[in-house]
Length: 421
Image 1: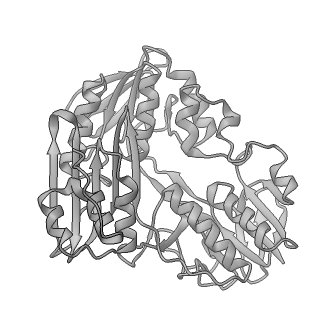
Image 2 (image 1 turned 180 degrees about the vertical axis):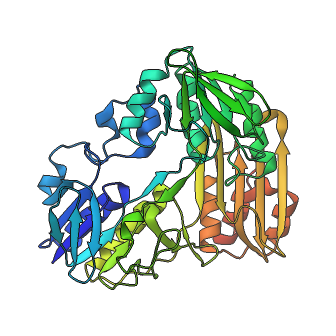
């Protein structure tokens, strides 16, 4: 059996390693289109603050790892898939045939439609090459503008602040991390960043970027303000890498459409990670979840099915945990609530602490927490197990900090812990 994986990120690497484990005699080829060994984009902030060098971003530190596992790594880009002849065309004109194929091509940054967005000195923070460019310009005292305060933007934010630049964040939403946190939590994060010396503009857009003097840039905001910048970083969203699939016969929407085995409409082709429109545990709908835990889960399950070991995908819990300059925030499941459900919120503005719980009947379906880390695993566990809370739902509606006590009471019939806020 010849397994081919397009994509050398976490999903592709885990899939290749799983295949080698469960199908030891198979041929495995992994194709990645960047010149470096497979690496983690999530490690780039650590590279920016010199905690690691480039090799520290590599997913596997041993240079002989893939060779020892007889995983052939090809550095090239797939330009076309011929699903009828089961053959891939590479950019260098080589051909690679396959028996089973995994599409794990991830996603790419989306450039906002802003005049001047292609000028020198404007970068995403998505690749190691981006990281090198940012390190070169983000010197202490440099004026840096970060467009976007979503999950990716806030990860980059901390690294930039630690580089001692003059940092300004521009977010068009009415709060920070608007797809992860509600109005209260998102604005607490904003206040925290401002307290730490970062200028944050929400409900604000960049209208245009122009060349300034020397290598500098002038950034025009929709409120009429003009900011000088030595570096502009765009973190305004990503989209799945499905462009090369046009004409292949594969069904796509926001990503590659799959069933609960991560199998596409073409039986020998599977998808995983950011490019996969897989099952959401909370809703049962099929969506793209561009987070690393989902990518890892997808890679393993897709590999099992590719090797003939039938494995159902139960769906991934929407989960985000973020460290913004020392303030930990997290959201799980249907954090925004459900129609007809009940909710409870508890906030301590002065201590930057917040908890929000969302219920459907007596089941916890979503949660948010800010400044609280003790029971992060419990929140996820309650959501993922759909544990019926019974009378403990009413206790939590009165005091949501008793989440651990509720968990213990419903799993071990004990628990008298104190609140945490």
